[in-house]
Image (cartoon, rainbow, N blue to C red; front, side, top):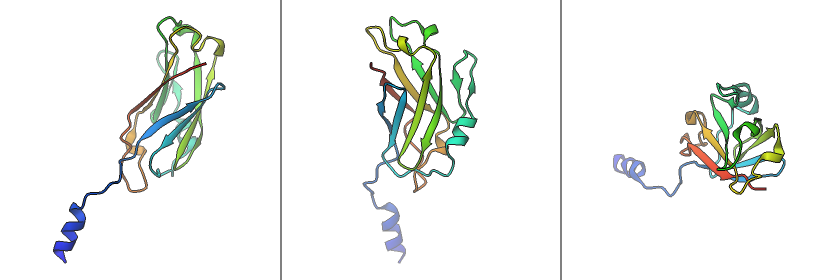
Length: 144
């Protein structure tokens, strides 16, 4: 019996650790983040949104999740003001809505802006098996 238990504990599994990716960024600022595993979703939209506050540079920050827009090479960062909130969060995906002060300026130059999502507190993002999200930061170009 002990031999069988040891074999189970050391048995290799094909299960991949939980990760996230930005699947899409819509023209209206809606971002779809997909998870490759079934995530534990006991905390929800309100907990994430309630942790958002204005950062030192005036851009929104959160204790759980940060959303940043990095200016392209020729862009004027002062024209890229925005706010965000999570509109949906469940075991397979999360939707984030960006609200730009001046949407006309976003990715209007040759080099587009880059959306960066950082999971600040990854220990709060884990799958149904208890494994923490391995993704710390996601990046994707914001194209027009």
